[in-house]
Image 1: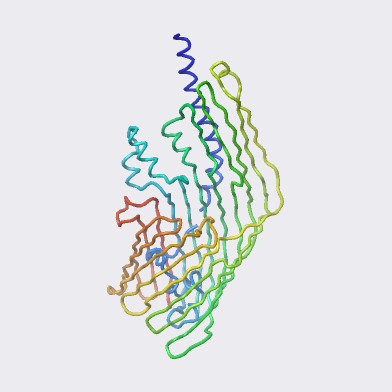
Image 2: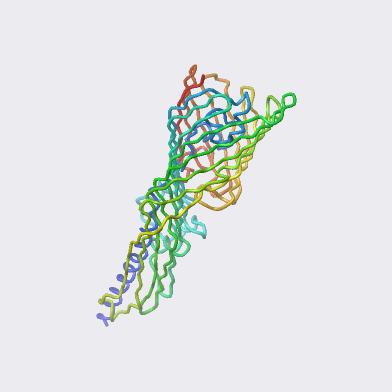
Length: 430
C-alpha cells in the first residue's frame, strides 16, 4: 500500500511539472518572440493632456497629430525638436499596489482567487510601446519629422495563470488557445503640409497630409498557437504547437490625412485618419519558426518512459507585407487664453497592436498662469487601454522648451497604475 502511495505522489509531482514544462515552452515562444518590440508617443505635451491633442497640436506636433493644423496661423510655429522619448508598458489586470501587496508573500487560496479574478476572461494582456524622435523641423505650412517606433501586444490565456497559481487537478483541461502576440519596430521620415480651403471672417477650413517613408527593423507574429493538456485520475495527455512568422527588415510607406475647422479665434475642431494608407514589405531573412509537442496518456506504470515527442523547425519564407493600424481621431479644443482645454474621440478601424475598435475618450487642460512653467492634466478611458490620469509640466525659457509627462491609473496615485508611462521632449521655438 505504501508503494502505491509513493507512486501516486511521484505521479502527481511529475504530472504537474510535465504540464508546466510543456505549456511554458509554448509560453516562452509567445513572450520571447514579442517583448523585444513596443510603440508610444514622444510628445510630452500630448501625453500630459491625456492624448487629447488633435486640435491643439502645433508645429512639429501638428505634423504627427493633425497636419491640417499647419494651415492655421495660430498653429504654425517655426521650431526645431531636438529629441523626444516616450515609453508605455501596461497590463489589463494588476496595479503597482497589487504587486507590492503580493510580491514575496505566501499566497493563500483566497489570495490566489483574488488574483485570478482580476484577470478578464479573455486573458492577461501585456502591451509595450516606445517611441524616440530625433530632429524635427516646422516652418509655416510645412514640417519634417523623424521617429523610431516599436510596439507589441501579448495576450496570455487565463488557464496558464491558473495553472501557475494552483497547479492542475484531476479531470481538468488546461488550454492556451486564445493567446497571441504581434510586434514590430520601424523608423519613419515624414513630410507634412497643410492648406487652407475656405475662409470667412475668423473661420478657416483646411486639409493636410503627412507622407511617411518607413524602414522596418523587425517583425514577429505568432500566426498559430494552440495547446491543450487534459488530466485524468490515472494519467494525462496533451498536444500543442506554436508557429511564428518573423523578418529582420523591410521598407514601406504610410499616409495620414487630416482636416480642421477654426470656428473662431478661440476654438477649433479637427479630424485625422492616421495610417489611412500603409504597407510594409518585409523581405530580409524572413523565416517561419515552429514548435510542436505531443504526448499520449501518461500513467503511473509508464511515467518513467519517454512519453513526450516534440519537434521544432526553421524554414525560410518569401516576402510578405503588413499594414499599420488605422485610427480616426476627432478633437475639439479651446486654443486661446491662459487656460487651454481639449476633448478627443479615438476610434480604430481594426483591432491590432496600437489600435482598438472600441472608442476611447480623453480630455486635457493646460494652465499657463505661471508663464514659463505650464501645468497640464489629462484623463482617458475606453478602447483597449486602461483608464488613466496624466499630468505634466515643462520649462519654457525664451526659445528653449523642455516638457515632461507621466501617466498613472484611475487616480493620481502611482500605485493605481497598471504599468509605467512617461514622455520627455525638448527643442527650440522661434
